[in-house]
Image (cartoon, rainbow, N blue to C red; front, side):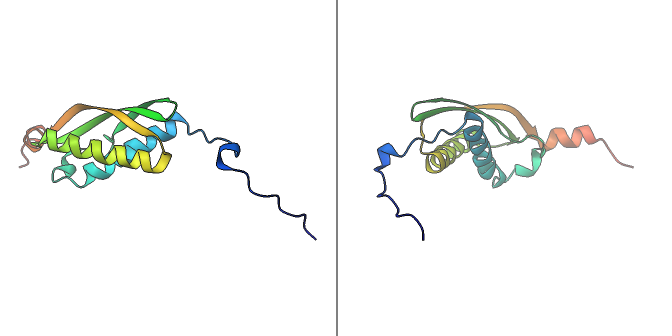
Amino acid sequence: MSAPVPEQLPPAERGALRIADRVVAKIAAYSAGEVLAGLPDADLVPREAAPHATVSIRKDTARLRLALELGYPADLGAVTAAVRRHVASRVEALTGLAVPELAIEIERLHSLTVRRKNEGRVR
């Protein structure tokens, strides 16, 4: 026979869950990649140029910094706004942390014209 199950503890007394900074950073980078993969110029950006994220967690908030490479030409304001919205909502949904600050740095723009120029002519 099994022992009787004690009554369930209230949520405040059950303990705490701490999510590591690097886990939140991976969620943010992956979420940014979801948005960038759907862009028209996504094929201009090399696969190894995946988004990178750093995070600082204090209490129940996460402050994020994303580094991206984008195809050119692109509406940078619209792209960064879409990335910001999606990343903040995914981090909040998956971790329960509020995201009051999300800084985006565009490290490089990849242009089809420059790619063609670097490839040279084939005879």
